[in-house]
Amino acid sequence: MIAIGQRVKISTAFTMLIMFLTHISASVISAPQLLDSMVYVYPKKLSEDDVRRSEVIMLIKEALKRTEDTYGPFVLKPASVAASVNRTAHMIKNGGEVTVAWLDTTKQLEDILLPILIPIQKGIVGYRILLIRKENQEKFYHVKNIDDLRSLKNGIGLGWINEDVMKLNDLPYEVTPSYEGLFRMLSASRIDYFSRGVVEVFAEFDARSDTHVDLSVEKSMAFFYHKPSYLFTSRNHPKLNARLREGLEELMEDGTFDKMFCEANGDSIRRARLDKRTIIKLDSNLLLSTAPKDSHFWFQPENPICPE
Image (cartoon, rainbow, N blue to C red; front, top):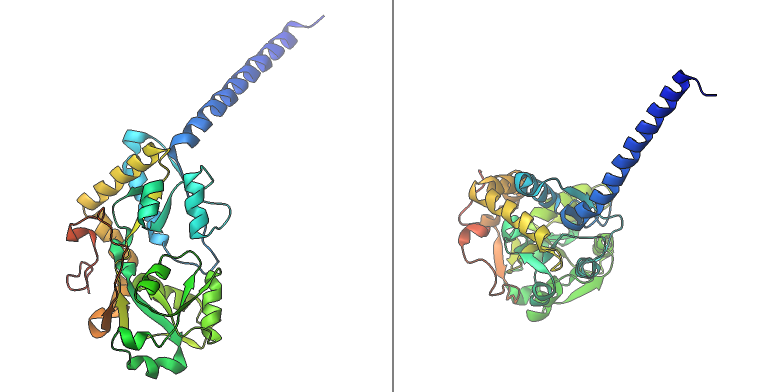
């Protein structure tokens, strides 16, 4: 026979078990709903020294925080495995792990994915400064136009949209599937330069100054081509896109977008001293009719928004 005290203990334990199972059941039900709509998984960086686009992640986070009252909580995290540009786009389109990514736009991408037509980093990566071998700086002092540039070979990652621009302008280049391999190729004289965005080159150089002591940032020139990058999501999940777009629009309207841009990139812009460089303009087929026309969306060296 079970004593009264024992029956109370058993009843209490049973009640607690029911409450626990109910909680677990609710969690199991709600988790897929959250995953379906509000989980943003962005591309994993390609190496430990890959410092590109870190401010874009912060921008995404701020845009999502701005929309919590309307859309509720969100999850923002990197993918578990690094992937190429083409593989990343494939994963977004076909429901893979990545649900949002910053990609250089093309007509094909805008047809198969859903872009947010606000240029991340204000299109500044179209301004290209070169990583070179220190010993070749004198050679680059004499590069004044596109014909001079045609005597030198660039390095490009597999699947990078830059390749189309190189072809269009008849500029020599070599492709490799390895991001870090491009720095090794430059050190080994397999390429003459590695063109990097203004907001990429100094951080990349600083991160590798101990391992690639033979490299330097070219001092006298740069080239420019239109190279808009947008955030893309799947067309199958328009709510993910709408939330992020609304948040970014709010950041644009109240000036936070420009403030974050300058906080992240102001030092690189000042170090670049574009006004002191020869700027070679390249033809580009990457500025599509869908691109925003308002100049406020774009970085313009002649109209600086970041304090000196």
